[in-house]
Image (cartoon, rainbow, N blue to C red; front, side, top):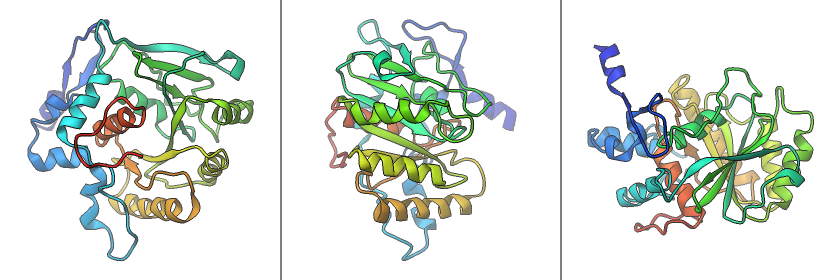
Length: 288
């Protein structure tokens, strides 16, 4: 029965410009996810709010509802992540130095984090409705050695940055610092932190660098399906404390995601669509 249910979550999806050999997780589509029972749907869309009742009273004022888009907002954002003949989503180029980066003027977001934090897996989940987009995922930490640029039509560009820490490229500092400091069309940095481990010293350095450059950034807790829930809650409170007391440019609300279960992925798509200026929210959610 369990195996049957697991297989029922997968189905082949054929989209424009794709090859049908890759299967797409059923919950990758909001239309499919919306068929879940209401409680499961809300937990899938808003995993941070789902933990609200388990947080200790007085442990801190975590912003659970700061970005709370409507179902219509999420559905409109999903269209940006769905390819069509007039809206192509694809790998564009890679670079190891700033004089190699593509000259693209549209809004840009970058994903940054420690090696093995699940960065490439999350980007693959975000692009799961465009299965022809090749985002390489490796079990070996430090697989990404270059800045990889993915264009989402004429809407925005997403950059997969090399991981820092274990097996980071030898020229990581020069590459990443130069990009963050000089990239004029960068509108948001997404700093990924392993939800089963919590903030490490290297993550603090990345936050300090973003603050130093005056760059708006967001903390995304990955792998929330791994480990015990008590550990996740402890790490979540740690993250909120750091955001509140030790950052100047960080968005007040952390985002929680699971790339394998798709928890929080739809919400993150919507946030990206909003901060890149591609959708105005119909709800009263805040996305600054």
